[in-house]
Length: 146
Image 1: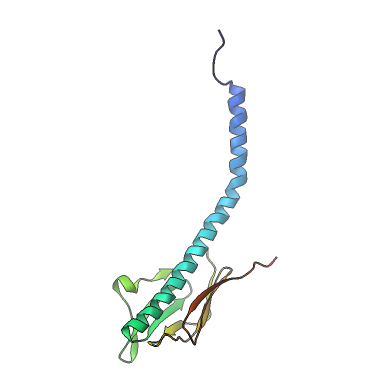
Image 2: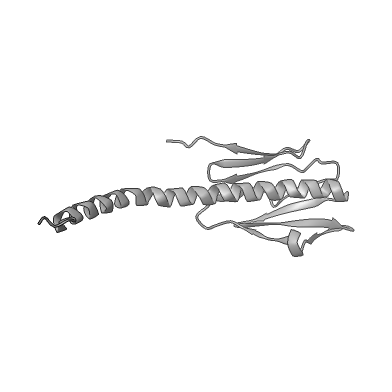
């Protein structure tokens, strides 16, 4: 009677093939995770900018998106100064350490008529541009050099 099943050699051969495939795929997995973080950060920052523009129009007062090294948050003009928002709309957006973030301006202001102070934020190979005249937020993908 012939035994059914796999020999130890066959199992080891299959395990070696699987291990080799995993070893080749792992570097790409790390790059994939970084790309996901970059795209998520771009979406969150552009959403915050669009939100600020909408709030300025709806509420008839200036809203600012403020930038620091690895974070951004909203402020609203009350009387003659800007007050940092709290609660649901006052959430601070933190940029992951793995994501290159560059804002050469301290803030972008949105005015009640929909216009803005304009500006540009660079996140890895993406540029988020806010038009001064229209206040429209546009995400542009730069081609990688090299």
